[in-house]
View 1 (tube, rainbow, N blue to C red):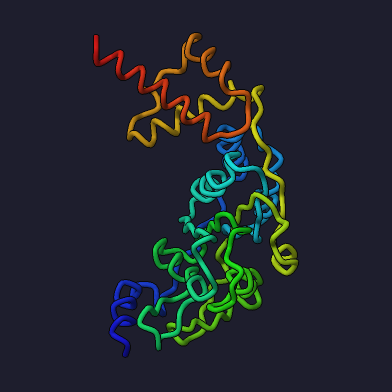
View 2: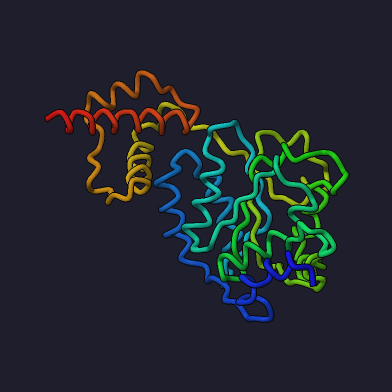
Length: 274
């Protein structure tokens, strides 16, 4: 056996020929409320995504493509959707991936690796993780190692993903319970077979009118990143809120987060001086 394959298979032993649990669908109203708190400007997207789970016992979304301007929060929404649903999230950068990487490499190669949906299952130790494919439209178009777009087709249909022939393991895998959520700034570069297999929804940009609804969630998220209880991060006072309101007129959530981070740093610096 290829030494590299033996090295790769060792940490996967716990999921090979082993029944894995499927995460049950949580109460959808609770999920909706949690997402609405963080993304109050994207209620239509939330409802569109969660409608797929109505009546389902376990979490499995049909392929979902979020299309919108950079900075609107598409990737974060996809990640939080998975986290709030209670499934593990595997992130794939489409611009750095191709068919041979995502779909697995043949065991004859030293760089042998199973398909990434199976690796997502192994890492999460569940049968229904969520695979987030970022910036799908930026996937490479060279066909030397197979385009990511073409490779994805075999994973997006239940019929084929339930019998995926993994080139590294040289056996058939059932990865049919994996959910795929992709993001794109535009659908124009995407070939029609990919567009046909994804449910496409436009992801809006927040406006200045959303600022007061967004700030609590941004503060909560920053507190979480700092390892703090959100209760230890007071809301912005009137001066802080006015300063951000003058500079942020909607659009990029990344920019809003940076501005709130700057306010929190200024608070910390003032506290250190006192």
